[in-house]
Image (cartoon, rainbow, N blue to C red):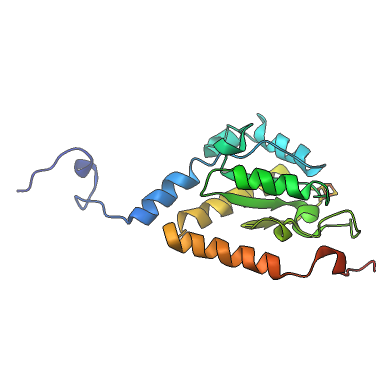
Length: 188
Ligand code: SF4
């Protein structure tokens, strides 16, 4: 008869095995803290998602942080003007690593209906994006669905140098993309 104590008593097979990577992913995905900022109409839906009716607190996300240094999730909610682009990048750079980004809505993902010189045609031209959320505006339910999909992604994410390599690849792809002033869409 083996010695049975604590948690082992509750488990049918007597012991629990996992990988450090899985354990870190589990803890990270359940403690995401978003940065507090919004750029346009999509931000209203983001605020609704954080309020009582939708209650993001259920997912360990009740604290939208006022300082980027205490945040690890950037929800880009709204169109990004060329004037705001360096500000968005600075907030991203100041956030604690590891960090993740959701491009919320058509404008943040691709420029949306604003196919003009003033708007960045997709925020992935300035920061790496983990999840693209379509819609104009996406409803709070859609944002919550995107957050849960991001949870899955974080739960299976690589650690250390592997994660850094992935970020470098995404950043290199963004830098290699065509400059926004050369992009042509349906209206040009
Ligand atoms: S996607 Fe629609 S709702 Fe969101 S910022 Fe653009 S115009 Fe506004």
